Figure 1 (tube, rainbow, N blue to C red):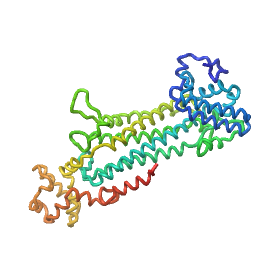
Figure 2 (figure 1 turned 60 degrees about the vertical axis):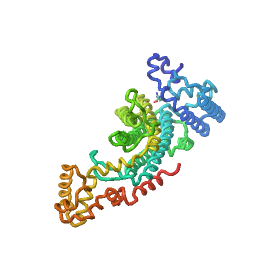
Figure 3 (figure 1 turned 45 degrees about the vertical axis):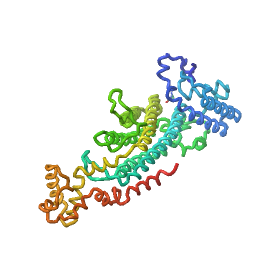
Figure 4 (figure 1 turned 90 degrees about the horizontal axis):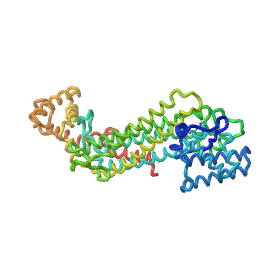
Length: 459
Ligand code: ARG
């Protein structure tokens, strides 16, 4: 196919080099953004008198038809095209002739591709935020139903202090809320257009960059033309935000995998989100969670790829930048795919409150509460800590829990112990009394739910 840049060179390129150079395979997904960007550009050129009104109308109509044709499958995107920008321009000229050749006035593919990408990623941000909100809703709903279901809280994977399942789930809801904030921050910074930077040095034509920006819903224009065409910070920022989404999904996945194991039995995943084994008939595997955990590696890789591609590229545009798209598209595709299965998996999992409660009761999860009991009777905390440590040691040797120890035994350790200690170490009581802000008791889980629901709105 004749190259749109044939002129200085013959435009005849070795087929392998042509294939290597082409980005149509992955940038064709930006056809819509490319076309609406070109329509805005034609409007601006017409309004500024850079092209005639009739040429502007012919271009806008031709581009509208191409958009329609691609969307309805009547115009197939040529897989041999160099990129989506040359495909659209070539198709336009093929259809409307001479006026089509005027579209690329006061523009370069360098500012065009940077604008297309920002437009496209704006939509990806909105879709991803929508999916994160769905996950948060599933979490808050399950958290609300399980706000009083006691479970062991862990540090170092050792049973530490009792919490509730609702409390635990809301911790994840907070992470995903911050993820939304990060994506929205990056989106806001990204929402300026480089269009009009042209190849790198702006243009001599009397363009109106701000009119184009306004038509496309940008908040403004980039302020330096060299930066405009070479800035891909937004890709890195978004990939970093997406990498953190995956970190959170991966941590959550790990817990879901543990909780659904025979050893924990805290939850049971719905059959719709588990798989079986081809050989072991008893198996019900948490493949979705494992895949989310595994795909985290891809998204981290995308972030590293973007950072490394940009490192050391001199100003302004370099072809290296074509490598931005596959990485950032893959990061969004992966995160969206994970969220798409994760939310219904969470919404449909069965909670085994009894297993959680039993696990909380089995260890010495109320040891801190026993120390706090002594503190309440006047003993310094460090002394109480040591004394309870000795009691725990003796209990574990004898295979007893703190609830099993008779009062006479307790009294051998300290005169301060009284019958009321049993109430103080009752697991449910231990949770209820943790009323400090953000803790599992005192209605704080409910307040977290209200806060989150207020933050994400109803859309
Ligand atoms: N396909 C190219 C990219 O993705 C478009 C810009 C090409 N510009 C150029 N001067 N070769 O970056």
